[in-house]
Length: 315
Image (cartoon, rainbow, N blue to C red; front, side, top):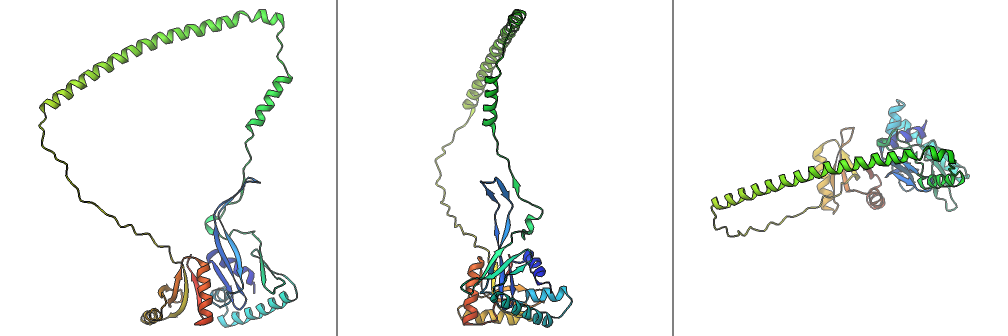
């Protein structure tokens, strides 16, 4: 089986891919980054990590492989169990396990699995086609210093013959500029005087119109009214619950509702988690907005209540 290939495909769609009796690959969104040392912009992406504590089979990986290879659930689960046993033997012998473009697993001195992500593929589908961009810094001041240096090194020399030839031309240029400025000033002065006169006439007519309107107006006793005070209750929008710790799935919705009532009587914040692709109604012990909180609660349920509990992530 090409287990590594199937894990890569599922990481595009889900935030948690569990390998039964081995561990789980988790993903978390990361915003766009700027490396100020290299002036490199990286697009939003998914950070991949590995959690050795999440081992319960949620059926996602096994069902996906069985569908892709047109096999049965039992056959794929048996083959995957043998592959996990082979991986554990490799780790105990000090060998590393490579999961394609996902990353590499190894065993440390404390017999804990360490994961080194490959960071070769961006599993965030909304960033498909985006790549890192390197921006070149602007060096305006450096160019200015180079121009000043060139002016100092290469002086401009005028010979006496050239000076006599070009003496009269600057005088003509300055005379033309002065004549243009005088004519422009006279024109602007006439325009300014005309504009001021028109503004004074318009203001006088406006004042007369206002005076006539005031004389013709009828005034009423307009005492100030006391308006009732208005109070607004601002209700904060709760964070979306996207991670569900599943207690069971039922073919009949009535049985699912009965299970929710039983869990609520036991003190759980039970809820309905929707219908899966097999048409089963899913019931959750509780729901969480953060994946880490959901995983902590899942481990607690698995050790104290039911080992068959698993987590569903809709994000």
